[in-house]
Image (cartoon, rainbow, N blue to C red; front, top):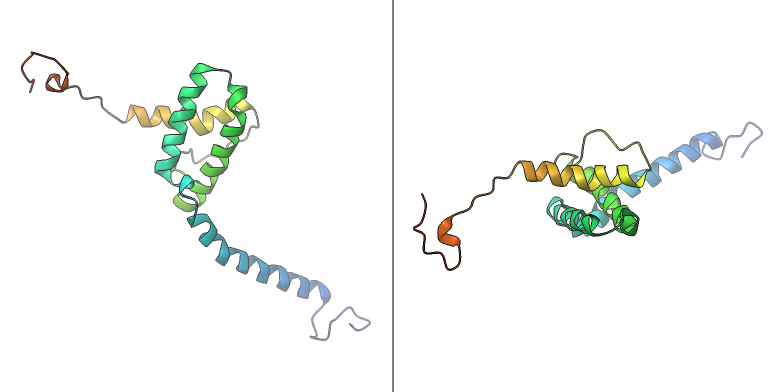
Length: 138
């Protein structure tokens, strides 16, 4: 390094540091998709099942008991958002801006489960009832 702060490459030390950070960032971005693809829990279908399970558990006990599971689901949901997009993962386009447990539960569990259930129709056919003597409805 000379008296002006330039290295042997003729670049200032700050520029060399920025180049190193950029190279590290590129390396991280090339390796990150491979590590994310190995987590099947962060796929939209798997998240939907985990949300439904937490939704049911929340009806049976205090929400505080589910905090660690909720935090794990939040992390997986954000990973899913990066890979597949917010809509595919059942999340709002607007990020959560609160750290309150109740609001995290509403954002990552309750709202997606309830939005998903509104889009499904319940179909009941009498012919599927066990022991029914009623004729099949059409």
